[in-house]
Image (tube, rainbow, N blue to C red; front, side, top):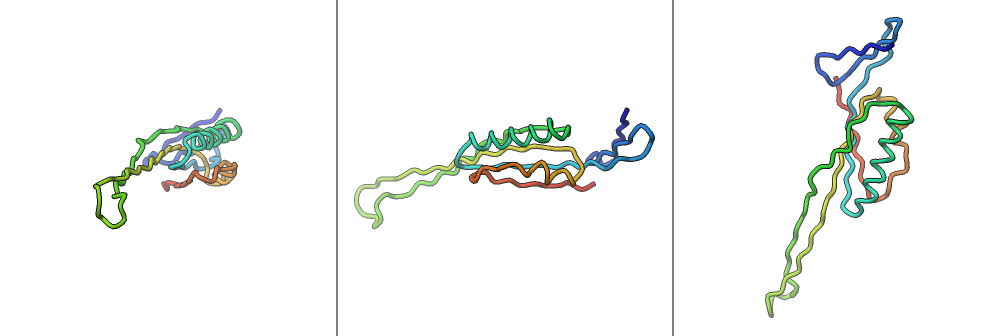
Length: 130
């Protein structure tokens, strides 16, 4: 039987074993995944991270939280000299973002994030202090 004591900051949790000694401090770890090219690769990386954390390590996982897609639009003239008919090119880039929250000791983050990450997916890991 394990007892959990929440600290006053609510960002770290201490686990106590049945004999009363503290096993370690759990930190909130926020992993942000971003891509502008392939949503399928982003979802694959999210699924691999969650599977590794939840199934293999038995950690508490919250997410993936899908953030709103940012659409960056750019409208430019087709003509390089500015003369002629006013014709325009419209370009846009969509930025997709997912957030995953883990509650674990900081030592296990390296083991969880050691999966193969697709080349067009950016990963940002933030370890929140007490």
